[in-house]
Image (cartoon, rainbow, N blue to C red; front, side):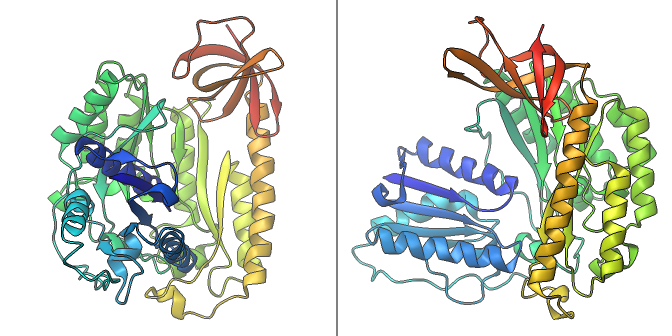
Length: 440
């Protein structure tokens, strides 16, 4: 069968789509380039906001409309929390994704006997359930230059705006042995950079009664895998950046000095309404501790604008806090109500205000990113080449430094450079948020 995949949402979803694709290929099926030519269309849905839910369902309906003969499969977060009808032939929850091949093959085999109809989605699971990590095995990333390793699923934090603990369930951790085995496989396959990720990465091992030291021990083992030259971390929880954990990170040979610490708001009163378990002072302390240990560190974050009841004064606090911390990049999200969360029942702010605040914060982010890139001028940096393009006889290599600054280099007449190589260079200037580099 020809299988078409569409991924919505986070990088963990993309990892799981890549895993599902590999399972289909291993079972003799092939990729479809478009949904119109596919026998099976699979949408890995997202439910992080109400808008994400709507988009997930919209894409399912569009595929069914444009290719009526295809089997439509909804899997992932929107499927998990739905308590009504999902516009798909097969509905698969977040902890059942590794069954997708058998579910599809069984449906197709019985199709002649079965009246084709849309099935009812999953009832929201009880969040107190216990579960185990359902391992996909090793997963190759189509990117070809860097690869993700998912080490954990679920979240126990219950921020007031977030549906993910309901959609993904409580924290479950992948075995250390499986994580290291995948890292070894990826290194043997030619990947030089690995990104360790999870739904709530810093909770790795919590389901087994361990603390942040469990993640550190895992990182040490992955860091020691031969062939791995870069180790990058997914989103981190500020409270978990203890002195002991930071000291342990400093000892890793291949860790990239790029840290994504989720903030969500620079106002303490908003943080309390969000049920975030830190203050701005604690967040700043963690950032200062990291910067004291990692030279040229880049700091990125997520911020929500227009959270329920957010005043102009509270938003001004966020703007001032973000500027003072000199983020290299801010991922900005206007607040979007998600039915089933506590924040959805709070007094809401007009969407035009949310978007206007988001625009102001994005403008700040763009300026800070350009200033961070400019601060790198004159420094040496190693660059992982993502792609090489040629225009008017000029070859340009595009890639990223260890601290995740996008770079462009004129490679001249060199033919020895390839996608996936790591090269050394000197940063000679900038273009907006990117750096120009001379390879040495």
